[in-house]
Picture (spheres, rainbow, N blue to C red):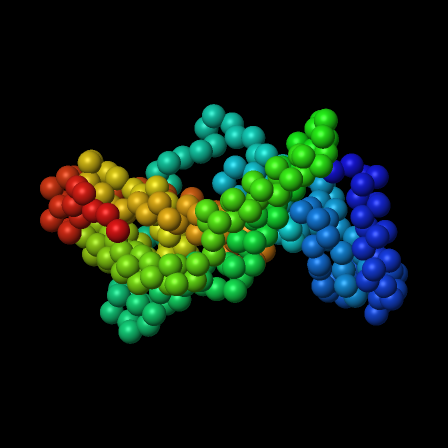
Length: 286
């Protein structure tokens, strides 16, 4: 987005929202209460300050798996460049303290289910779903610049967005129906990895590992032709975008990569026979 366009929509937003409680000079002396103006432009409802995402301009950022995102808006602001020896697929991300048996605690089941429900069925997940549709519209509107017939292009764009919403409708009942089986699957896999393959898992790590496994279930994990974590295709449409986790759920996006590495490290000595004895099978589906 050009700086001229940002200035135009910023002035329009300020004109609609004024008067503000605090003066412009109060920037930095209070915690801004942001409202989205555009996909990568936000305004403070208290002082009228404008934040437009750009590399080097965003104060609060977070590194995710392959890029850097603004934690305020969730917008990608820079791709990361890796050197050949930077990535390791077999990193042990915890110390060598013996695993804590979280599965003996009464709240383990409810904790896992709470995490899954929050990411699939909460009001925040619903908000982010509709926001993703709007972001899709913002990306698609670029097609209008070179369109010969603007009215026709706008009509086609709206039809495309309506079609997208119908295909991935936020159906609470459908989402609630998969919370229980998904939670049971995650608990089963964690239980097997901890007790049969000595995966380190301390009490405070239950939430992050649950999140990581939930996102891994979009494609599943197969080792030695044995399904360790079954794939559930619905999760690809239901789960919020990874770059939104930090800003809206207080979950670091790197949690997904860390959980993947944790599972890989636990399976480093696994064999097909041991996996089958641990309760995994070759055709597990949800």
